[in-house]
Image (tube, rainbow, N blue to C red):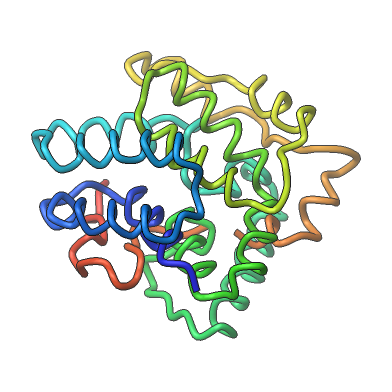
Length: 238
């Protein structure tokens, strides 16, 4: 069981006053387990400092502009694998069943491939299994990290941390394929609309490889990491 993965899950939820108050605890957890290299831990502390001291409404607006409005930064992992294809529905069902077999209950409002929920699930698994599972969507983490780097966003550190923990290196060709997808600015509403209408991203003939692995069973919504303050669950937004 990894408290670091729980902490990273919390960092990717919608900012709340409770998350701000938990920033110091999260910082201690990340340092104590040492799953993340020092350089990346320092970057995580920068994000934690911003969350702890920033204006809450500004933090929430930043989060929405990054992760809710921009498809290329979606925290719903199947968005980057299946898009709107029919495979997505079965992948959701399979992943939900995997969560339930592990005793992770979901509410009706939750979708299984939301990254914080996926990390919450992995935090309950043996660390070797969790690291191996993180390796499967590592190319997605790498693409998200690069897009956040270009935006000078401190959230980049969370994805660098996930890559560091993962028991696999992202394949350059898969990362490049994701980075070729449209990545409009959040203020460009016309470009954002066009991006949401694009065809789903696939890899290889029929993207069969993605469907067979755990990454074909990953999406969730609005759930904080366990052992963090309960109110870190993000508030529903339209």
